[in-house]
Image 1 (cartoon, rainbow, N blue to C red):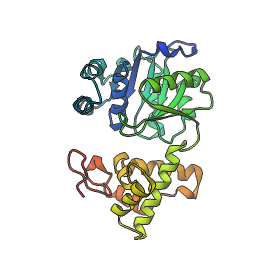
Image 2 (image 1 turned 120 degrees about the horizontal axis):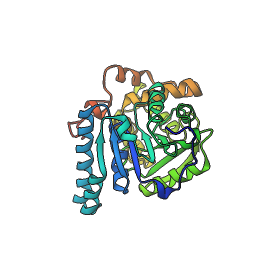
Image 3 (image 1 turned 30 degrees about the horizontal axis):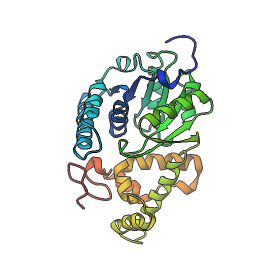
Image 4 (image 1 turned 90 degrees about the vertical axis):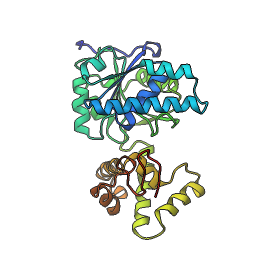
Length: 301
């Protein structure tokens, strides 16, 4: 790593992106990165996870072609631009932008960025896909806080239109502008928010999901009817339990615990949500959360 941190280059100089973590969010980010024309390295220590991610990305690209949303040549090009890597140094070498999509554990993210900084050029931009944690704290681990921001994508990444761009305490205006252009090239509408707990969207989503669990706990209505009421009455595309099961109830619980610790009693997690997580009912990824799912993730109960 060079000794002196440089100013970020222009958007035109972002050609190679490394995505760290091949879980649900990481593979989605890698998908839209490759489809947008960026050379994309998807990194994970778990080779089985990488293989599953590649199959998922290819399947979603093929489905896009099948339903007429994507040209066949574009899908082929995206597949060719995507590379899998289980060596961190190799994954980030030459990257102009590194996007982290690791689990929502601050210590893990800080350690990961500390390692990444050793292998990247001094001009490389860093971003975290965190949905609630402090971008400013993560930035401090890199030695280049002005080149660091949050890029909060939404699940499923290849379908959801929003990118919440989070400006840390020392994030430069040039970094924000460059990452906003990257997001727009990926097909996203971009909003810029300050680095506060939960940003904008996670605070609202956490409250809705938590209140839905409290209503279920109190017997106000069934989970099916609460989901239906929110979809048909409030025009949400998914009900709060469907959304929680998609995100992962363990992820939702971690966000609420963080918001409860930083913002107070309004965000105290529902006891019922905590029990679901303790029981291993995490949502689609385990086949059962509030609802039940088949192996393809289709709701069956």
